[in-house]
Amino acid sequence: MSWQSAIACWLLRKQFRPETLNPHVSVERARAHAASRVWRPKVPAGWRLVVRDRKADAPLCGEWLERECDSERGAPVRTLLYCHGGGYYFCSPSSHRPLVFGLAARSGARTFSLDYRLAPEHPFPAALDDALAAYRRLVADGTPPDSIVVAGDSAGGGLALASLAALRDAGDPLPAAAVLFSPWTDLAATGATIVSNDGIDPMFCGAAIGRAAKFYIGEASPTHPYLSPLYADLRGLPPLLIQAGSTEVLLDDARRVAERARASGVSVELEVWPKMPHVWQLWAPFVPEAKSALEHAAQFVRRHARERAAQVAFDAAAR
Image (cartoon, rainbow, N blue to C red; front, side, top):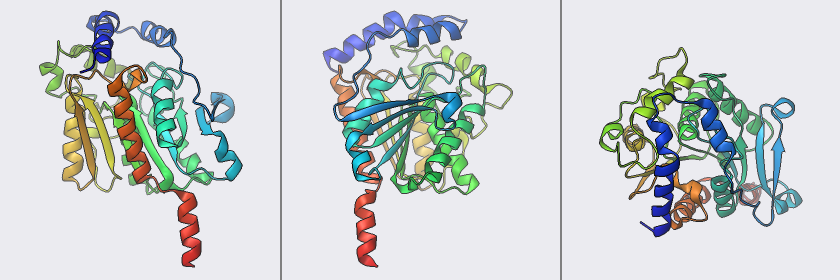
């Protein structure tokens, strides 16, 4: 554990964890906290950021991060569809730029960070509907499914996984792979680490998970497979990379879904990083473990998303 990550954990204990100890979860305070973060990363050199308005650009409302050279040579090599975390009720593409910029720059993939509708104003299945609509628009616009990797953190990780199950059930072509950072896959809050890691998780108290889940659950069952993908049939899904911290109260959400996916024949890479806080990848570029985790994820993206330019040339030669 680096000294930088130790400082990050100390800050989370001082600033974020006290809020989760409060029996009353405040949507307004959570959103204000996310909006007031001081540090905003610069757009990586050679890339451009384009913000798409919710009203004008639905279903692709959010943020595009694209390499400038891609527009000059035609179709991009790879595409990331990213779903941000925040319990389904706060945060945004803007709040998750440190992670998204780092992953995009390392993987070389153009990235669309989805601005899905938030609870409690828009409970389940609003976020899922938005993610499915965005993916289908990407495909309809000509992005090959096998060049797409779906990714997300925390609630966004659960949303990404639920989207895969829903796409498969609907008969849609599936993306190449998925990357899940500290995914929240069980809104019924039954994981053993919600109890065993309570008190050592620097970010959350265990009881906060069930309280926060109520905003998005609405009138649905917390074990609905598209709400809590831990309970979904995971057969036939593309390869998964899952990263989680050993002290997270949500660790079992990652471990159990990895076990069930493997039992269903899905290729799964599960990485449990010692003493890392929830979605520590957001601390790039300050924390060495965040940079290393993003590099691992970028390698996974490059390995699984096909390079379309090379494939097109190969197919043309074969003909």
